[in-house]
Length: 397
Ligand code: PMP
Image 1 (cartoon, protein in one colour):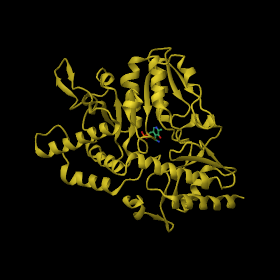
Image 2 (cartoon, helix red, strand yellow):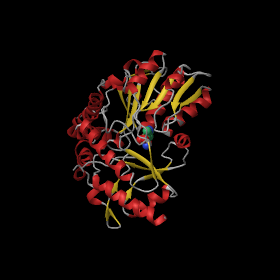
Image 3 (cartoon, helix red, strand yellow):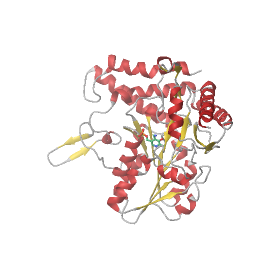
Image 4 (cartoon, helix red, strand yellow):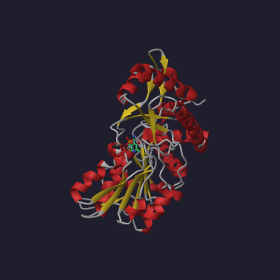
């Protein structure tokens, strides 16, 4: 029903087949309204933000700041707590260098989990090589739930950095419970929301984490835009890690006075066109309703699980988690072969370690096939996937 909003489905065919796009966890497709607004921006509003005291620059600034307030409302926080970044990875790296680097010392503990994406592992590993803090990983059970988090909190970590939703197992972590537990021992909570925001209600007042980061491109928005939320009291105390134009109040030969947050963290010309258009992605989500998106994806996910289970030798990982991410393997067939053969029918899935090698080794596999769902998918996509998989299985017999 929503497929018609996304021109890619009418504009692309391969081998005579319509596109079945099942890789939305990697990036989502874009609705016509977002594509048109981007074109319109360059046709009608393009001027650098903040700098000009002429109409066009004022309009462009207004659109950029409108997105900040749209995002803030969407997450139930205040605009001053929203910093624009390039994406989730950029946001986590910002937190690591602007916040964690000054907070951590040799011997401290940073707690991660075995289900983290490499974006929430590698920046910590790089910094720990410089500072000498320790990293521990909360293990996961076979069904993709965190195990023994409470025990790990007894080691008094300074920081817990955790994904909201796993990009492989679809497990949803209970962030408000986790924030509550962690704050009792003075531990900062950083949340990677990359796989959550596009299809579940995220109210940051309720979650009460200290930082929350995500990427616009996974929520029907343009590439190169990320959101970093930080609590006002934390952001206002942080020093910027990038200096440049527009983030200062004054500069002399000997000194610099920064603007208040969030502006002090946005040095130089920002990706203002894409940021401005991101408010249209939020409009798109809100017009459908985030809860409607959630339940639509849950239903489709249940349907996919039911159908996939009929395939001989197919095993689903994290089966009970209905967040639109279904990872599986099939006895005796390599995930890359599965993805390559599905591509022949223009079915796009992802195969590999999904930037989660620690998770893969804890599951005892080296790679999986992942099918991830969005609002533009429907039962016919699942039926095409399942009938192609059936053929692949009989081919390998
Ligand atoms: N975290 C998770 C859970 C993800 O799924 C992804 C994207 N695959 C990222 C972080 C990284 O996002 P980006 O590449 O947009 O920075």
